[in-house]
View 1 (cartoon, rainbow, N blue to C red):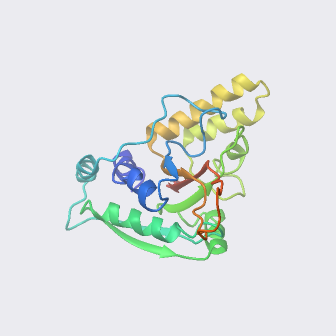
View 2: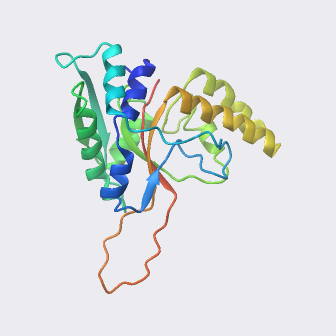
Length: 231
């Protein structure tokens, strides 16, 4: 189903990311707009803003794509509880409810061990199936272009596209930092305009602390998102 941009866009618009931030992340985070590009990092474009929450538009897009209440879009949605990210259970459940609230999506939420999910990603067994993924953004994300954005690599694939496949080697080979940034920006713009991923929240881990602990610094900037793998 993810060959249809209407479906990819609908899955993003159906998620209320502000609600995820205020409830699951207790306000300690913000909706994010891209896979791992952040302001100041390689490939960032100031036009990137979080996709809005628009359930009515999501329903319209799914209807245009041919789905009905009698014949809904059926998804197997994978998640796992990674160390230090225990909120993933609630995150997966919340996204499932938001998608199903459209009345046009039926979700089979499946939790597995992290190691199992990683192997499934590396072995390309998640085609057409969304899954939760945490990425750690940095100032230079060039390694993504030779591994997680290249289906010919042995790494766990995040997403792919013919145009991204063509640009990836150019990003990796370019030694001029400005030119590398411009090439990477092209890649992220393709992802953004084609809704190849469903960015969720940029936040640090949610900690449970005793009231005796004061001034605990929450680490920000770790992006959480649902990836749509297209092989």
